[in-house]
Length: 116
Length: 114
Image (cartoon, rainbow over all chains, first blue to last red; front, side):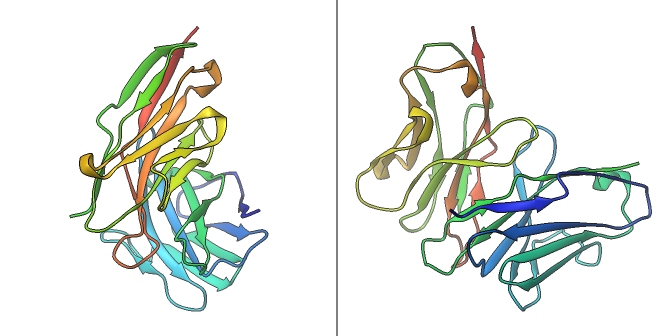
């Protein structure tokens, strides 16, 4: 149980275009989802926290207009990188948590974004 | 401030040798503690977690970790390392600030020599 999927697993886009990454909880309802960014050989950097039906809370230094997050349902959150540039190339990982009170996050497999 | 420290950036061990990866935390209350493993290009896999109770926690793949409140540590151990254990290991503490947020350590990259 507690499986989280991400789509796509890899995406290449041209500079200036936008790309959407989906994060789905497959067998549970995720009241909270998180989006992380991971640079090569680095730890995970939390970008934002999203709760179903409300606006995402962004971490300091993360541009909310560039990284649009939508948590439209209890099983789906999307991250849209708008007007992507090569410096946005990274590994993006989502995670999902339930309201069960154990504060455990379940991680997706990640999406490799390359902006050319 | 809440923080997680993994003092060892790289560790190299021989296959069959024992392993200990260190994790120290700074936290104002009783933390929830996690160890994750990440293979190259992959997401995070949960190895084990500590919420309460027995301070020695058993996880998957033969890993265990011990919560030591007096030392603010949650070190990961394995008695005999396999070549397939080569990966990046992350310690995390949560929740933080009344949210689900985790604080991750910087990771320890494990290399296993045949």
